[in-house]
Image 1: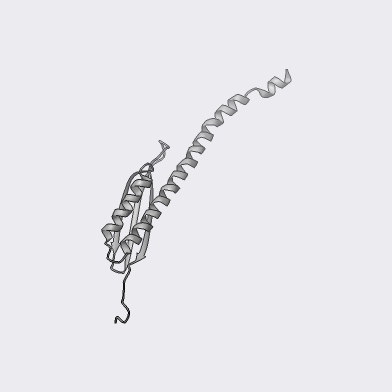
Image 2: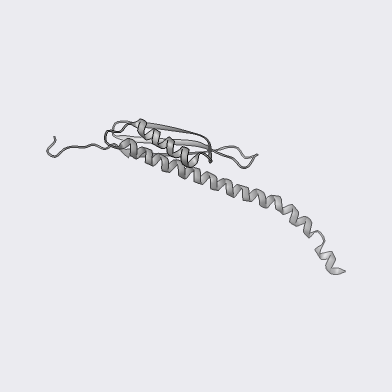
Length: 129
């Protein structure tokens, strides 16, 4: 009879902890989605900057490649995204930003950003001034 009294309330405590554990698990998954979305944007921005910096390439080519890569790898992760390309003739910078999907209804949307730069290729022939 004494053993039954010690177990009393154990189920209630366990059931009360389940929502806390579930929400903590959702936070971990949300963090993982956000981190992966940032990696997708960073990789796409790096490839887009490299494409735009190639000899005889345009900034539009880098932007198109970046948008294609984000669309293929991040369309399920991002609600929306934006890509901008800036070039001063010597350096091309590709910036990408996006809103990550939220699996937590009370948690606002998270925005991730990434940018990459590359030097524009220039060919000087041998003996050129």
